[in-house]
Figure 1 (cartoon, one colour):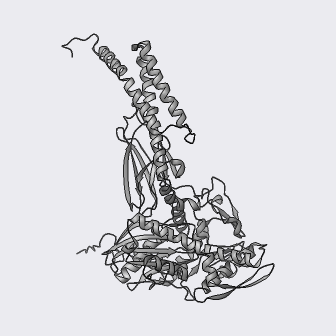
Figure 2 (tube, one colour; figure 1 turned 180 degrees about the horizontal axis):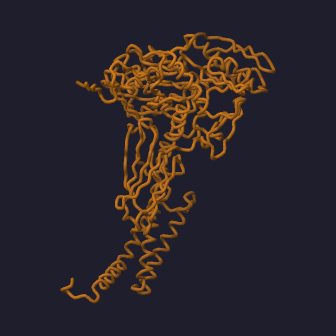
Figure 3 (cartoon, helix red, strand yellow; figure 1 turned 120 degrees about the vertical axis):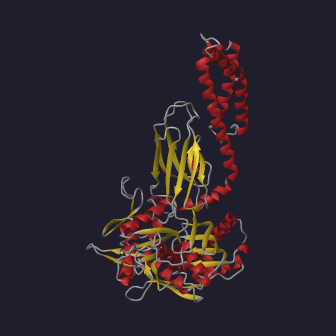
Length: 633
């Protein structure tokens, strides 16, 4: 008799077969790979027993390359070809890298039709390399480490990204995974991964803050943990703040104190390497010598911990300002936070731990290694997605950091998916046409918190064509935004009556400014009142425009029913309204009208044309009844 083996959905049909799935923390400074073995998540070491892999790649003249520790050892000697902290360039254009002049690399802006869009490239001995290619080198090395550890092929990986990574940066990370030959199971936010590790290891419940200060980015997330459900309430941070900035501040200070001149790219790199070593040493001691060899001198300068803390106080304050914003978004006070999880090697700095403890009034949680906690959480999630987890009791509810919407008439933003919306999600909204006979609709997808398109970030544009000609406002066009579990967006537009539709998977051009994401929420709060006034003015002008178009169309069709004085009154009302609209085109002018003035003039025109509308209706009825008798009706 034939036997049929039944397995749970998503589980292996062979109960003894285990899929090899790992979690990867692709970090700015170091990267790690972790996996669940014997029911416990652990980081996988290399042949020398080291779990950390420096995120550094060096390209050689002979076409070879060095990765990790080997590359880092040559960083000060061959700075031009040894690329570090390239995660900060993911999804960035040349104009967006503010510190480009201080870095030892030869940045190149690619052609507009290049595969990576407008993403910056770096000239090396091995040719021009993009941040995607550099990240793929690190990911491939970690993939080989995992396959060597298990002596088997890798089924897939969960890769972590900063919570504040935008669509361009997330897409770049997915591209890097594909280039490294990795089956990407999911992208998850780094703070969420850390919460998974803490939540399952410690059986914690309640509201927690995850303070994640890595080498290149800072994230703060507020999460609620309840019986295996990980719900992100709010997220924030700074995509241009990390341990590298502390290194740079220390290096710049020493240069000023010693009156040094950095002549070569290797000089700059040597100072950065020395600054990092000095920073790390100051974690355990109050005084250390800053030592570096540069072309013009040998640097040996004593640095006190209090000096280091003073010159980096502004950076620490930036992180705490983001913490306050995240709490405000979550509508919580610091007393509501049960604990603070510290993530990232940079959180070892005493001033960071002290600032966090003073703000929340409690010592932060540090019982898990801050370097490893993100990779451990990603490994737990990967194990579940691969179907290996027997418990199956973990639900991950992440959020998107910034609102998504489309442009409407007048350059306004109509938000469809609000920020801090739990993902995956799908949201829809109905729109209509602006003019009679309109057969196409241009859809402009934007991201941000401001009311005007000019103040938000453009993600994509596409067109819905083939709309049947109808009167303005008659068409019903449903626009649906779908955000997947990786935080990536697709948009669908469908005219409900005819069924014509168009869609786009949003793969934005790379090149968002480092400051833009960090400023978007701040600008949204700071300019809320101004944005409301501007939006009201634009909406009033759009309504006025539509009123003028409709009135002019009616006059062209049936203006002959009006007496001369009636026509003159309507023309004067139209002229007055048009003058206000034209004045509103210069909102900074002292004579610019407000929304209320335009609304009053629009209402005056509506009332002034009521008699004309009645006359048009009478004419229409007469024409419809002409030549017909009562019986036929």
